[in-house]
Length: 192
Image (tube, rainbow, N blue to C red):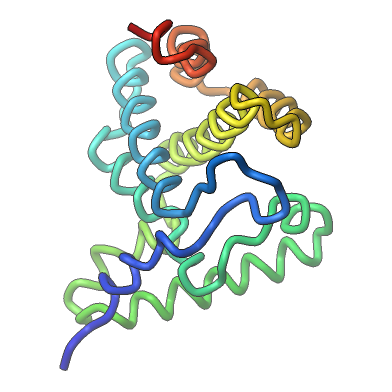
């Protein structure tokens, strides 16, 4: 018997994000998940080194890689649709749970347990908070990149994601936003 979990993970590159928005650079969930993993790792390192946090950076990175795995089967539902109506939000969460469980059946049973917390996002509260912050931070960075490219379509999304980030009580996130976020608004020549 063969298992298709990793073959499906490889198809994350075919699921585009920001479906209702005009993009100068299309972003798929594989690219987004990589960035969330990088940012979650960074937030965990900052949290541990600067604020006495307990989140393991490696585990944060892994959680970031798998945080949107269910979207391989569901696709990416745009945020304004997903969160505008409580009934839609709850129904979509149920769909995501079914999709996550379906993905886990595509692993040998002895491996499924190791992947389940990441695919289902059933993580310890502090770890989940880091991944959620990294996810929102990745979305905001995408908005900044689009605005830098002259795409005003992302103006309101940039404001909304910024406010959402400011509402998150996570010292490592505040530190990242102060120390590292401004770099995302610079050109390549300015970065060097």
